[in-house]
Length: 261
Length: 107
Image (cartoon, rainbow over all chains, first blue to last red; front, side, top):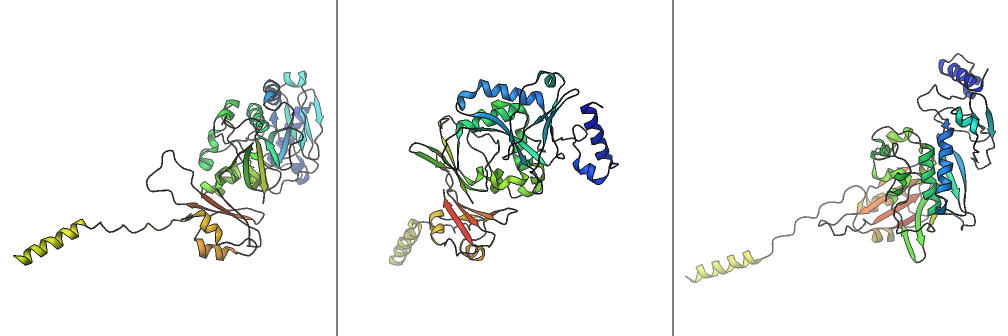
């Protein structure tokens, strides 16, 4: 049986509940659900191409992609990942920090492959990961984040939000990389630990970001918990922040200092 | 005649007095008068949620599954908007799962 057919068959069993409980738990769902966890391989490759075009934003960095938990109970140990097409299946190596590198494969592109983890839909989310080496501890670089946003938008990594979620995240979806050039794009980044404060630092200039730019803007919306289940920040809301990517008064070398809880 | 003159003088004085100040609007939830002054009355490592609520009133609360809570207070915006608009000062508090204040910051 060809690979995609096999995945679809497993998805069918899982959806119908006909498979044993353990098999359903392990099922890889590709297209049977409305919001599958799998991502389009050709869109991710397009994101890689954009990274090459725009790498002046982060000249010392390499591009990786990152898997993140979307639910509190999502087990991230032992995540396996593969490029799945009709005639090829390419296993990808997932690092202990859940990042991975994607390589270009012409057959997979031609066959409209998917990048598929061994997790059920809705349990994980994805981001681009661009890190300039040698930065001080607990800092990110603004140019790296700008490039993460552009690649993430190009690659279609951001999960769907229902209309009116938090009153503003819904506008993000139809946008491409140009969305990242807005002064205040609401592209969510996730710190490695729960955040208390984020400060932009460029030479003598420092600016502590408003708490409204942390926690996906929850401090501005009393109903934030009602929509949380639809946000790919659900399990990481205490680590979520956004920064003024399109404000060119902050150069790419600006340090984004993260103070943890 | 003299009485009439005195009455007119007193009436004029009353008219010249400034109108009484309107009563101060009460603070809304999460509003404080001064973020810095509010921070000064708190004590990291000992202030509890109940004590902070008693001192500053209700906050905008963002609570997490970990048990940590972030409380946000903002200074009341000026009645006459400023040009350009000044950012609203905010006081952000972090409570540990124990319920004790563990961090503060003013912006």
